Image 1 (spheres, rainbow, N blue to C red):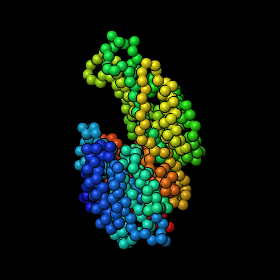
Image 2 (tube, rainbow, N blue to C red):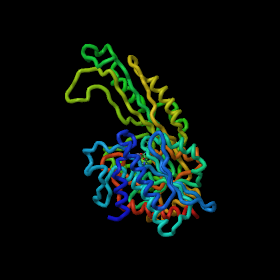
Image 3 (cartoon, protein in one colour):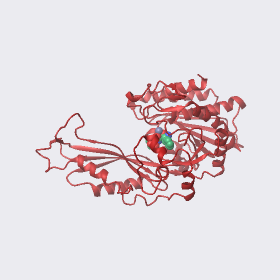
Image 4 (cartoon, rainbow, N blue to C red):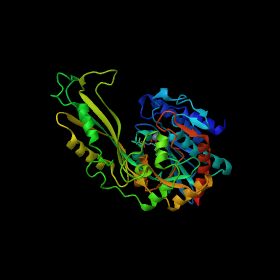
Length: 443
Ligand code: BES
Ligand code: ZN
């Protein structure tokens, strides 16, 4: 095994699950490992405490005549459960079929280490970098980056830069350079319906007392119309329409056909807002999703009860120029209007992040495309992303800087799912890409 792969294996063996307090020390150990690695390169490092998990900063020596590039990544991962569905343990990385299998392999440790090793190789070869570099690594991306925006505000001057680069998004097909120029935003909410003070006998009380599970189902059903559109009043008011050049471009990108989406997901048929392709629905249209729903008896056989409570967890993916807080307000109005009588409605806000889009043909965008062309065959593909990296729009609002998304995540990487994986070839290409990127951004 190469030294680079050994390093990745070590990085992947930290169970740095940000959402789970029992992994708090593992997250910290992982941050400290990164600090040791960066210090040895050598870069100047800082570990910043936050009310949550630490932020890691590293930089080379500043020179006024060079451009400043900030590279962002996250060292936290999603929980690995359900564990029994993994072919090998999530925090004991293994290589099979040319891929590294572990939680975080693609999202984001493999891609983040490719940034670090690309910089390391340039430093080894030249003793210097062609740019002023700021590494910014956080341990809370998977929980919505609650402490990073305040950190940016407090350290605005030290984080001043010309451009930001991130590898934490998709690559449309193997060995295909992909530049992302947009991300969807997100807003989450949990809705509880509260009925009787305890579960009731459904024969003795059924018909006379409202059923919270039925009420939840009615609310969920009220969210969409018959054409796959979100039925919340005003939901689409600020949605920027798709540009003709984007639709034309995406229709030609490999790996993005409706059939490709079915193949990757194993779903029997396409579904979504009428009048759009699968890629258009994911990249540029907002959605309402149910991420979890429950209430009532879940065990074997039947149990004749009216549950006292039921819940649903919603998330909404947003596109420019929708605002998460405004959408949440419209959701509240919608839920209050559609909640059936006889129950109590409780809405709890979750985390959020704004949508983002930039011009892929800016000077820095062109530099990123040249770096992709030097690393992968053919012309780079330009896409927007269905996923969210909430801090990216905050980078623009707080630091005034755009972000280039140089994605290495394949659609079958199974990020957030069991058996997450990262092809060794993507890891190695990512290292070369980062070397090329610094050179091109410096021009
Ligand atoms: N790396 C992903 C986002 C991503 C993946 C974008 C693939 C595009 C393609 C990131 O780590 C992530 O999962 N973000 C969360 C954010 C949320 C928890 C606030 C998401 O999109 O669900
Ligand atoms: Zn993720």
